[in-house]
Structures are given as C-alpha cells and as structure tokens.
Image 1 (tube, rainbow, N blue to C red):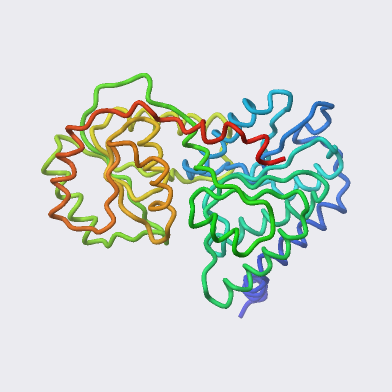
Image 2 (image 1 turned 30 degrees about the vertical axis):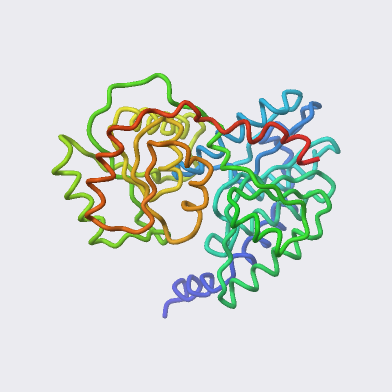
Length: 357
C-alpha cells in the first residue's frame, strides 16, 4: 500500500469529534483578528448558530423563519447568523466578543440525536462554550436510537446540556417534548416548527398539475414499488407533473442564492394542484402556501407528530397506512376542499420571551 493511501485510510479512522477538537484548538492558537461576523457592535445581539448554508430547503426555511421571528420579537437586538460550515470559527471569534446581554440560539430542525451526530456535536460545542449566556435550542425533533452507540451519545448530551444553567430546549412535537422531559433536567418548551409562523399564501396563482416531492435518503419509508404506483397514478390523473425535492444540494450557499431557492419552491407549490410528499417541510410548505397535499410518513415520528399542529388545514391529508386504492379517493376529496383561513401559527409563540426567561 502506498504511503499516501495508508495516510488516507488512517485519517478515515479518526473519530469526527477528535478531528473537530483538533481544528478548534488550531483555530484558538491562530492569530486571526479579522472580524468575519460583525461581532464588534455595541448593540445587544442574538446569534443563530448552525444556520443552514447548504441545499436542504427545509433547514434553509427554518433559518429564514427563525431570523425573521427573532428580529420581530427582539427589535432591540441585532440578529447575526453563523453558518454551520463556519461553526468552529464562529465559536472562537465570538468568545472574544461575547457580552453578558447577548443571546445564543441554535437552529431548529430534526438533528438532535445520533442520526445526524455531527450536527449534534456542533450544537453541544456551542452550548459548552457559552455557559454564561442564555442559550435557546429552537424547536427540534429528538431521536436517539436504542443502539449502544445511540445510548452513549444520549448520555453525553444529557451531561453537556445539564451543565448549562441557562439552556432552554424547545421540542417541536409532543413525543420529543416527553423525551426531553424524561431524560434532561433543563427547561423544556413545546412549540411548533418555526416555519409554521410564516404565511406564504399570497399572492395566489392559477394551479395546474402535480408535484412529486419524495425522499431518497435514510429517512425514507415508502418502498420503491409504492413510489412507482404513486407516480403512475399521477401520470394518469394530471395533465402534467414534475419532481421537485426540498433538497437542492450544494454547500456554502450564499444568502442570496438560498433565499432565492426558497422563494422559488414556495411559488412553485402555489402553482400546482397537488403535492405528494413524505418530507416534513414538504408538508409545512404546502400548509403555508395553502397547497393541497397528500402526506406520507417517513421512518421516524416527526411528520405524524408535527402534523397535529396543522391538522386543522383541510387541504392536507396524512396517509398513515399506504394503500394504492385510497389514493384516488383522497385526491378527489382534496380537489373539493376550501382553503384554510388560519395559516400562520405565530400565536403559539406570543409569550416566547417570557417562556425562555
């Protein structure tokens, strides 16, 4: 084996946490006084760590909605995003400039657990490095597996979270809330996904055709045969259809590019008669744009549980048990239902400042 190949193989065996710790120490020892994040302002500041700068439009929407919400709720604060790709640099630089009145937040989502352990590790680093400031973990789905590795990672999270006296954990559905309350000693709140505070139903467009927005990753529950059946039915029923994923790919996206992609998918949904999806934010995007949708479950509880927040919307049909014979019936029902007049769930957040104090 060549030396370069051997080195590559050895690097792959180094645990992710070890690599991150090495990078963090290296950054701490590097003399770099450049202010990348505009930290020198004397204003009160709220920081959004783990801000999405990659192509998952669900996470981009969470970051966008969280930024809007914080700007509206804390008008006296400057809101600063720290992209997840620059987490370590953000930690090192902010520690030089952090003020007592500053608030630290991490983005909401579905990455508290061992499925996306790298993101969870970054969250824990943020919590560890700012012990004297309020830290708010925005609405999350928590899902640690029952494997030995999952149990170890849960115990690590419990230990790190438990040491922070000003940490607030927010669950975005009841099952996660119960899990937090059972395992963690921190303050725990229950609030819907922050994207549900948006209302993107206006302006309205003429609707035509269907969109298929289905997962291709490890959270998928539908089989290939079931997806084929759905696709064949859509071909027969609608004059036109298209595939449109909420994940567009890419890393290190600029603010302009990711927001443009977000607005584009919302407008695209508003121009279609029906969306078929098994993505949580596929469902939520349909809700905030008043778009009819057939929603299928993924392989964990986040869709079924989160649906309860928006179950009042008659234009969303959750399919818990797949049966091809039900598809036509459900679509016929959707085509006859009125639009909801209650979209934004901002009212659920009306006492947010008091709740997190």
